[in-house]
Length: 325
Image (tube, rainbow, N blue to C red):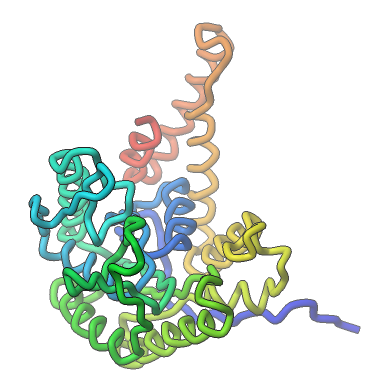
């Protein structure tokens, strides 16, 4: 007798990713989970050039600024509690002086804009929540409140129609310059318990319905990776959440990464990933006795293995330089 202990989520994907592809990943914490895994596996990608963003409108605004190669000026920042901030950027870009904050923002944005205009193959976007905060003074949706008082913001849930309208315009702009671009959306499995369980579900449902409409409008370019459904239906247990019962556990993240790999990587790509990961770990090894003959021999053998892999896959050379730096 066969007993099924989980409900597998069927994933239909005609897109295959390999190490030659140029990628950009934006969105919530789950975007960071997938993105860091890909970087550590030798892929060519730009991860969250504005830092973590949770709502669809801020992600769209960030992408439009990447396309336009916007350069921030002092008027785009504000000072709060001794730091200069951007309403669209994560706090990691903030600084004690406006010049330093502008440098942090503009250098990162210039890099991402350059990467975009060199040509992207894949854009991966994670939506976290349909709730947004509107700065009442600026009359705009913000990506980050930077711990300012809640009374300075209006909180609301955006509609399916708002998301679809904004992203239809954005996708048309993207495809005008990169007609073959593949765009993969996903809804983060992270539960926003502050909203309450009912409101969290309504928020996630809004995101799902918006993505479904975008898939229908752009079937050749837009698809969906079911990270939310995998956690809800394949894992479906509090064992797979961290202690806060909000974020997926380390085991759940590893499982999602494996399902992502099964969906988008062929056997050769997975083999290259494993070789790159092993060599990178060895390259970052810090010996107790760096001047010993054993360690010198170890480095010679490691260099030989790296050169053999680069000879077979020349595009990995710069990825190893990134690891060394």
